[in-house]
Length: 278
Image (cartoon, rainbow, N blue to C red):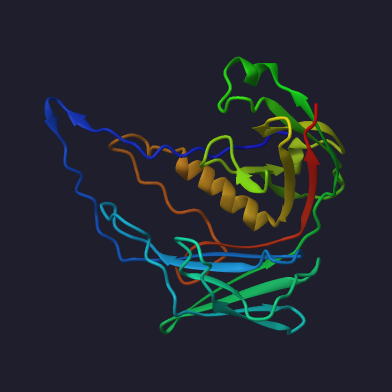
């Protein structure tokens, strides 16, 4: 499987002869950013709403705390979300279901977010995901030569079966001792099933572990719209715009209406956990 990693480098240096160049960036109106997730697992449903800021702005991204948020399915069931920031820092703008619910495979879900007098809407379908049959692990000689984290030199091996008679798209998340973990902090791991064989026989994780660590892998199903969104994001974050005088790349394609940025994702989830032992 070819797992794609999105690695963002937020640093740019501009020089013209011996004189520094001051960027004259166009100020554009602030836009709403919506990140939503509905799954078939308990405790994963949320919607996060914020606003974009200018290039030179500093501090926390402005959050929207007074929106009206509603999720509906294609059977007519409605699930209102309420603003309920968690106790940790940077949690304003997070909305959770007023009454807990889980999504169902095959159902299409619609998100309606009203901010002021503007309605932002999106829909996505909950598709099945590959079951993670088992996990194993092995010592990585390559990582041991120059470990990113001392002692963490074991990679997880994922075993599963992937249906080959249909198009499928997946997002993968890796946890170490209960914490979501990336090899680099800005990585995203996703895949088209064109890169997967029917028998997934020990694909290695991009994240490394130590003996006594607990490792967990989560596989999320995605619609084609979700895969396109992550593909656009990959291209955008790894595109310099064609150089200093090139065109500025556009925003990732989204399923959200009215010019909102972000994505409303609906997924099935399968996971597996293992404790690394000598």
